[in-house]
Each structure stands twice: as C-alpha cells, then as structure tokens.
Image 1 (cartoon, rainbow, N blue to C red):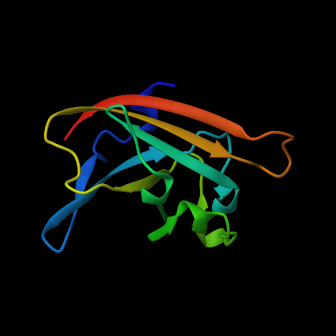
Image 2: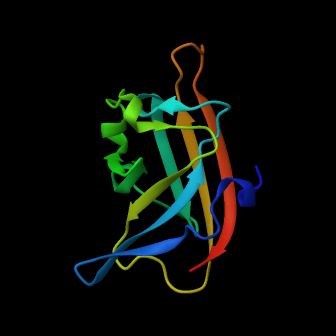
Length: 130
C-alpha cells in the first residue's frame, strides 16, 4: 500500500505530557473496505526505524476516546466505530518520543471479522519527518 494514501502526512508528532515528551502519534486509515467496531481489532503492530514497539505501548483513539489494544477487544459500541476513510490516531508510549529528522514506520493492522473464516492483515510503510 502507498503510505501517502494511508497515513496523514500532517499527523506525525511527538506527544508531551507534564512538560516531558512521552511518546509519538500518527494518524492513519483503516485498511479494510468498510467500517469496523473496535472489538475486531487484534493488533496494530508498530515498527519505527526498525524497532518493534511492545503491544502494551500502543493506543488507538477513535471519536475522541482512547483505548489500549486489549480494551479495543471489548468495545462494541457504535459510538466508537472506525469508519472507512477516516483517520484513527495511534499513540505510542516511548520515552523521549522521536528525534527530529527522518523516520521510517511500518504498521501491521490485524483484524478478525466474525463473518470471515480467517483474520485479515494489512501492512503499510511510510517515510516521514518530525
């Protein structure tokens, strides 16, 4: 997949809390042909500059509410559907965030729709700058 179509080029930034950089975030689109409830998300595996991010450090924000990947598995409310074509915000807890300059990201979305006999995975790579 072409990263430019999936990732919001304006959506890459470091996250600061209480005056300290504690991670980074990016915005990207669901790689599925329709909207989904968050409960079918099995993983959003993030690799940044060759470093695999632990699953427990990845959070997804949809419609203003943030969930860990484990919490996503229990979210069935239509208020928090990830709709086709909409950007979701992924926040990665990483002390110090990302250094200024160029970076390479690879994200694997893994979903398991109940009506499919197998899970669906999609990978998207992109280069960006902070």
